[in-house]
Length: 167
Image (cartoon, rainbow, N blue to C red; front, side):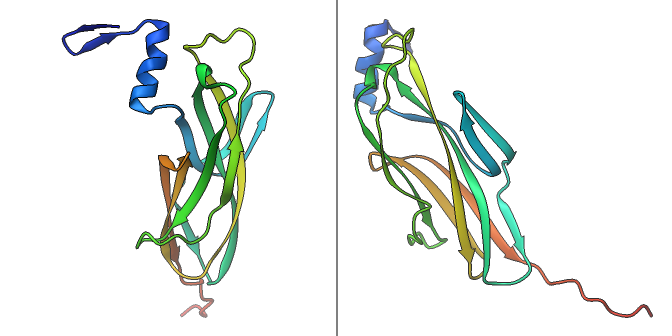
């Protein structure tokens, strides 16, 4: 490893050492709320992504949506299992129950990947959440107990349209 000023030049083997020192084993490249998502043929298909608000006419109300996740795992960490989970917390930081329970993930390194390259790891999780009141929820993506990404959702109530006779 060569250090010149504040710029670091890395050799392939040094990247593994740096990742181990910095604790950057797994990175989140995508963690987004969406209307639909699925993983097929090594691709993450996402529909209606990036929203962060729901406007609801009546509480309680159940809604179905997806969390699209793309992780980047160093190829040198192939065959090393890690635990992934998604927690939901309210505005006060109180856990409201997880969308996804803890899941053990272990990747194989496909042919052609070098030890200094990253492996894509994709998930599409369906969430069914019943909202009892207007609130703000934070979804936290955790790997081995450490948060690596977060997104939030604001749920607001709106009055139902009234059908008043024309004046």
